[in-house]
Length: 456
Image 1 (tube, rainbow, N blue to C red):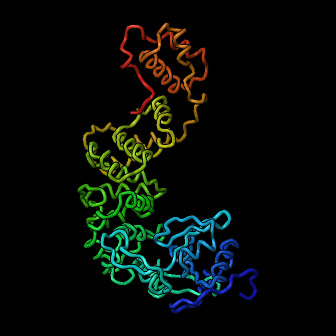
Image 2: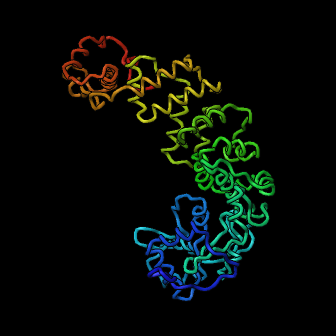
């Protein structure tokens, strides 16, 4: 293109009507990485057509950061491998390769035509094609069915995705029920795309809204890992409470979590207030599960195939619900030491649990008013860091020398008791800890009943 050095050669024309790229898209194109332009040029020089597709055109028009750039080409995977022998064969049976462009990776998929999706997960037969029109026709939503011809700086938008972006409407490409029947995961993707963060909620048009409820059982054909991948993105959204309420109304939430829900439950109001300042998807998920039988939660998490870290985090958050530290500095220090960065979240959740009268099954909640929790939050926030690193000043060897206790549970219990006192009083002197040890009555008492570094 005139005025731009090293601009890629024009590839083959598509079979889709085109329009000039809007000014903001043109500006974005002019700043594309040179390695990507080189990839596009290599494909064009080989006689191929190449287009930027997927989320990038959508995000550019929304003014959002573009984190991934996907390409569609009309060359076969085998031809692409001859052009890019170092490509990663991500899903070559479906025409997908990952091309290396310096420090960046670009997913590249050959245009294709497909037969029926008999299992609601994957096409029965994949045939390589040369029609961009057919390729865009099989995509899920109109806002994801646009393609940019970089070399010509033109946009292909056969399904009026730009107009839907302007209107803030989520609409399926073609017949909504057919699109969802092809891949049940599109149901989850629909709810994810409804959340536009600061821009609020984009509601589906009538056809898609009806199809989401009618086709909800298609989710049973989708691998749990894929469902969780989308669901945690939903849980991370600014307007997650509204999206969850829509999923509940459409009876989708019940299928995702295999649990019954009550639309009148206060948990959705609590989630809405919790996400006003920030969104922690595991904390949001924990609030969502707060009224669920705690004995069912481990199986629920296992069925979703969440990671061990996510599983342990949610179980930990839920198990602490209903408990607050006593309003004394020592207890607050222990609370913050045990929970670390989660301490502030925990107190905020306790505030919301009481504010919205959330029912916690199998828990006798600590009596604590909203005003008292606010005081706890302020004290915890203002509390300076521990003077010592937090590690126990007196180790096991020292305690054995000082007490003649041999290795075993009693020694560990005594060490934990002393460690708790050290944290409560913010002690940093070994001599002071030895003095405290001399005042403890440990010789003839049950070590299992001694205070420990734990919460609750």
